Amino acid sequence: MRTENRKRPIIKKVAFTNHEYAQVRRAMEQMNAPTFQYYAKNQIIQGKVVRIDFSELKNLRVAVNRIGGNINQIAKHANENQAISQEEMSQVLQHLNEIKELISVQLSHAEKRALQERKRTVRSDVEEW
Image 1 (spheres, rainbow, N blue to C red):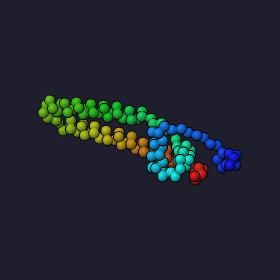
Image 2: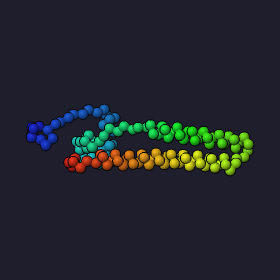
Image 3: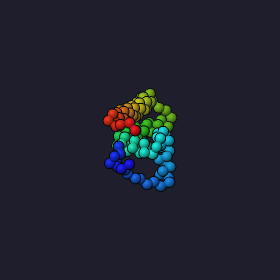
């Protein structure tokens, strides 16, 4: 059959090392792809390049480190004096709650972004293979 009469007239070739092709085969098995062509078209058309922005996580790490430093200072004071006041204990618990809140907020934002990204990648105009 000549290429102009084909449903898909554009043909591309790709070459793999043995290791690369083994990775492709594993991915095909996980996806239950019946053929390489099915898998390749699906990945090329529906797949996407993922860029991860770690700036928020870096900021979170800095904030957690600061709070950890405060907790260490309180622990050092408690060890030196062999006692800790109720106020100091309240500060430690407050710092731990701040850490939990920071992490919870960041995870919530990440989950929302992931859901929005998934919604964007769903394409109704892509024909079934």
